Amino acid sequence: MASRDTASPVTAKAGGRLAGKDLINIGIFTAIYFVVVFAVACLGFVPILMAAICGIIPLVAGIPYMLFLTRARKFGMVTILGLLTGIIMFITGMGYFSIATGLICGLVADLIWKSGGYASSSRAVLSHGVFSCWIIGNFLPFLVTADAYLPTVRAQYGDAYVDELMTYLQPEMYPVLLVACFVTGIIGGFIGRAVLKKHFKRAGIA
Image (cartoon, rainbow, N blue to C red):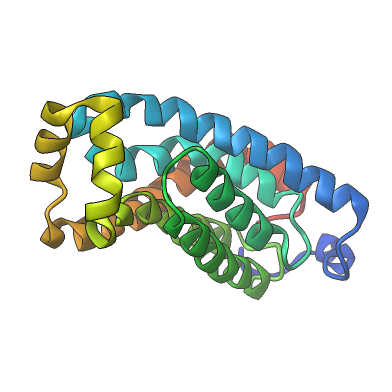
């Protein structure tokens, strides 16, 4: 009997070049993913919750991401999702680091998903854990380019907000935030897999 991670016959249709339908799916799920991220990011109006976003977004975003994987059966789709997410973050004022983290984390997550033959639910969960690490890019401007970035944030949210936020975003906290992205990304992946169990079966993901 095949193991749960063995590729199913459905994966015979996986792979190949990206087609128009794939690009449409990427666009749709990028929009859905961004809506989820934006909704959670609204919590950032409270400084301590801004720091906690690294652990909150992956828990919620696991559902649309895992649903996306039931349609992402070609290499490059997850990478593009990560890149587009990073670009949108840059456009909305979160700095340019999210473009790099979105691309890198998207690419690694893509490779993990591909390594499971687009049919392994455990690789799908791991893929989401890695993909979720792109979120750290939203916080890097506070660390790497603080002198240029903080005046803009102060102008928007005020000195009191920034001063309190920076008490949480000390340099030693960044490894913790990164780990939080990954761990809650794994948990969010399990949540998404449980919620979308029927979709996974239909897609031949076991």
